[in-house]
Amino acid sequence: MENTGALKGLRVVEMGQLLAGPFAGQLLGDMGADIIKVEPPGKGDPLRVWGQGEKKVSWEVVARNKRAVSANMRVPEGQKLVRELIRHADIVIENFRPGTMEKWGLDPRQLLEEQPGLIISRMSGYGQTGPYSSRAGFGGIGEAMGGWRYIVGEPDRAPSRMGVSIGDTLTATYGVMGILAALHVRDTTGKGQIIDAALYESVLQITESLVSEYDSSGFIRERTGSILPGIAPSNVYYCSDGEYMIGANADPLWKRLSAAMGKPELGDDPRYATHLARGENQTELDEMINAWTKGYTIEEMDALMIEYGIPAGRVYRAPEMLADPHFQAREAIVEVETETHGKLKMQNAFPKLSETPSCIRRPAPSRVGQHNAEIYGELLGLDAEALAKMEADGIV
Image (tube, rainbow, N blue to C red; front, side, top):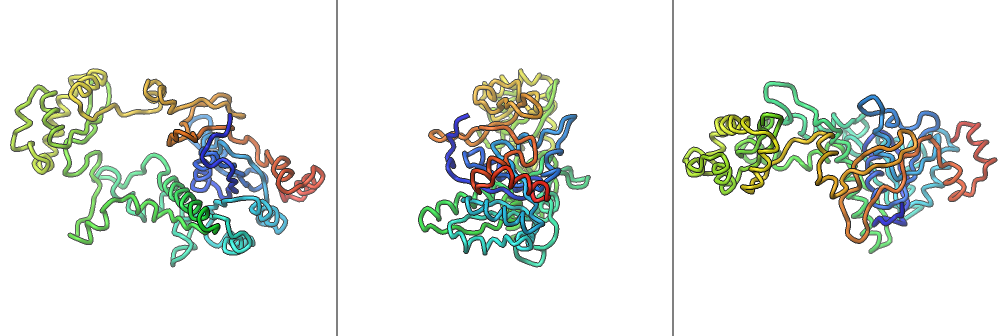
């Protein structure tokens, strides 16, 4: 597929593994950048065999729009190879434990001295500085430290996982945001820079006023399950054939929901008429709405909520997404011809840009080092004989 992305012409060397670094590479690749994925020889990125279900397909999503090379960065020859690759790049992504790049002779500050326009996005659990920087940091640990895990789940149970690796993908997103900002600065000054994206800080950034509430009044947010505390009605209710989300938590919306329920008088009832009153009576209000929704199917409830202009909708799983006409009309899910699994449906590239649309141009590389000859030949001028020797020596 033709590359129409906004970042066409930029080359990225992606190092690291599992999710934060690779997801950053996915985002940049979707937007048109040429992503060169560097993996250790042999098994490559562990993400190749991760995922749920009978077939492990996480790699097919995260490694799309990438070309794969192999390099053993634990030996000087492999480090030299990667350094040469970086000389042909605009951007470097890495998510190793702080100090690893330096140990491998790839100190980002030194790279920047040699290549003043280079942009290096470093993603780690705790950041590149501070007393915890050298600790191993996975997504769940960052979510816990950043304040997310404590507030997710039911109040009478242990904190819950989000269901996806949100800490890693948030860190990747902030890493990419930093790259885009640095590209603007480079366009102005010609200078690159180093971006330090910490997992726990990326989570902390989206915790709204959690810290400020404690600082101002000593309030500590607790787990509240499916409700939005003090803001009602906003919850998942049960129809006769499944779960349904309704958000009618503004005064005009509550009046419309009362009318939809056939009880317009509730719109002016002192127990529910105002935002504060509904918050104080949230539990009984939710129980009343839930008793009402049980008498309808999801399709019937959908029609009613549309008629009364109330934000609402079914709780989607993958089957509902694939069947939904809105997903289809916007091509939110596309079918990609993969090398390993044949045709595979996955989320499209977002957001949508009107003039330089992102797209999935190539499937994930099925083999470690699949593009060694192409990339090392194209950028470094290495011939087949040189590559064969490096392969025999365990360098690629």
